[in-house]
Length: 196
Image (cartoon, rainbow, N blue to C red):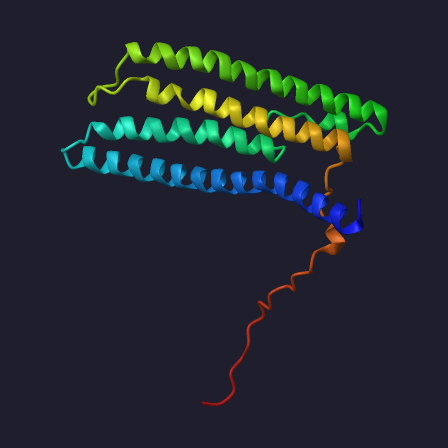
């Protein structure tokens, strides 16, 4: 295998995981849209109730947006190591003990993801027997977010396991305070004007 072939393979492998970066970006944008829609629907619900003409369907929209934002946000946070992740224990360790603890933590997260998939799917199927009012849509439309979140969490956790075992579980450290640019203090002294 030539050097060019190795570079192509490395680039293809790198692009393969970068597709998860794109997925993360899409999910982050979706979370932002869901949170904005949630805030907008709550505001509209308050306004319509205040003026005496409530739109009852807004409560359904609000709950749907909220639930999907929570579960998709949990998946994105898992990818970013911000959620379902215990860093205090693993960061105190080095070498093989850290590798073992990192793997155990991710296996626990993977177990949580499989529970979300399994029990979320069971709830989703049972949700076709209950209906939301006033629209009459099956409550399964809300429960669909649970197994979807579980699949995404499992996907991102497997990615972390593979990358961590191959490349290590070191996390980038936040920049040191001396790396920040100093902000000069504002001049709050009184300036006197001379002349017109």
